[in-house]
Length: 134
Image (tube, rainbow, N blue to C red):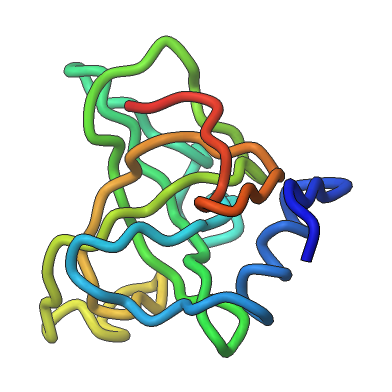
């Protein structure tokens, strides 16, 4: 395979990740994800919420063999860039909490993690190329 691989958009990069890359959740191993639109869920008025501390919270579709797992995650720190629906981001798993598994309107997977940065839809031999780190 000849690197870098540049995809036409974030969704194409995400689909490639789900189909052809190792998407097993391992503590400490980041996975690519797509920011979803939370307003599609009853009662939610903003796609991405921003706290007083600048931490952004978003609903993600994290890469997996089955086409993605829904996760709610916040950014590691405040950023100058605001997340948008459709952004390709890096998700860092922290721990699993069984109580979260399918117990919310988000149909979450049970893993808790953080958004560590925004990715570009370009895959180098070492991994996805970052646009911004949080």
